[in-house]
Image (cartoon, rainbow, N blue to C red; front, side, top):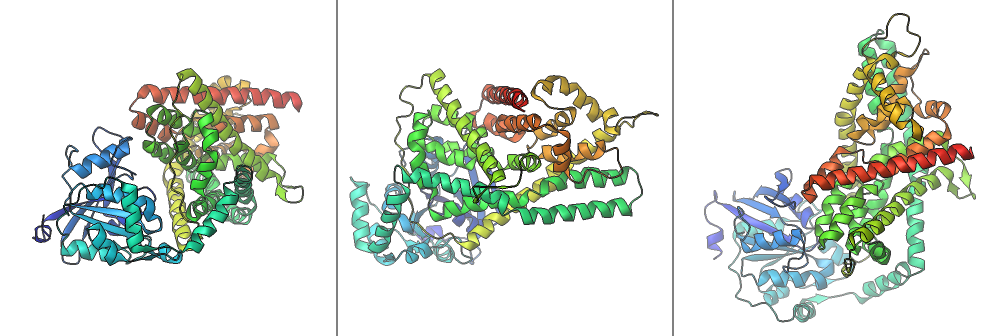
Length: 620
């Protein structure tokens, strides 16, 4: 197709396909081009995510752009790669053949990314090569002759910095002018040799940067020092979750307490005051207080990702994971599950072997997601003294680290059992291919954007799902009213109280009282709702003058240590998240697998809580 053919009438919509390796900044470029004009769905008949957006060029021309799944080759070996290949070839039902392939490569890792771009060029479609992350390349001392690379490659080449405001201007201008016809170039017999030739022709590397990275890797990837450093980094992360967050959490607690006092002082006693003070503030407010800890956890995860350390952590853990029956490719999905199991399970689409993918999906909920953090923090704050250990560490942080470690160890054990039960001979014999990016200092702006987005998601969740469930629970816990002459707390006569006492028969063997049983029910929607539910239940259970504004102090005084430890053990395993079960159903296309996951996690939760409760009671 000629350039003129692609730059005709302004009302014609051009179809673009954004293609590239993982970690090339493709999605950042997609977001820069489309902004809010995008939608996400699944491709028909498969579980692969489909991201489509639109933008308008300065001339008024309209473009429709697909952000295709990242892939290293058109030789498809996973569902993601199959979709990318089919769309690029025009073989995907219902998806038009792209007018232009926008091949995105990381300028900092051309040696790997240009190989895939050469495969795309051989398709014979109009194509643009986008050198993304040019700011990073310059920081690393690289000099890229863009015009020479364009001549040697045979397609237009533009520079981009997707994270900057005008970072995609050159690409938009080129697309607006029209992309020339595809070059008649056959696929090179040796992709590696052709890539080496292109780099020699157009790129000058700063060898001092390469030597620097090699020296750092000699320490961080050392078979002995590397795992010790990784363990120290994770340990520091959980220490910081408690130590750094304390002042901010105290400020939020004081603000919530003040707000509750204003409501109690400004409104007459009645349903409205109870709804606001005991339902909204005690419920949603008691979860909001853990926002600083969640943001500190994500600060570490984002900083490690930005620095280039995470792929190296995957390399360090590969041998352990393969020995446990998991693929080394499982590391990134499992790491994502520390934030939330839903995106972690979705990230398993890049795992090529079906059984490796299934096992990773089934053990992903064992990773300690951020929704568990409020529960852990509440119980640790109530029962574990805030005191230093060895003059350097905080005892609460050590216990938190132990809980996260327990989830990881449990996932390894479960994977090993599944490997034996499934007789997965040779299933772990898939070599791990990882891109090791250059080390860099995390960009403060990118960190701030990531944390702001996480804060928005959490606050939105508090303001919608958690608040709605807290109000619903308040209603169930407030009605019907107690009969005349009642001597117990009003909640014990309510619908919620009846449900809690009925469930207590089932959960009494693991030390749960009826208040905990009530909190488990709304916790099915989201684990962190259990904290708000406990706050609401104890606020309405208070027979004194004031409501329960210090939940940790109340449960610390009323529960025994065995009960607290049992609840912690329960939450290491409990599948109390409807969203997680729903995504398991969608990703595996199997209701049976979803129920299998729920059943084995519930059995592990109950069994571990039972053992923990009775051992702790015997010892204490």
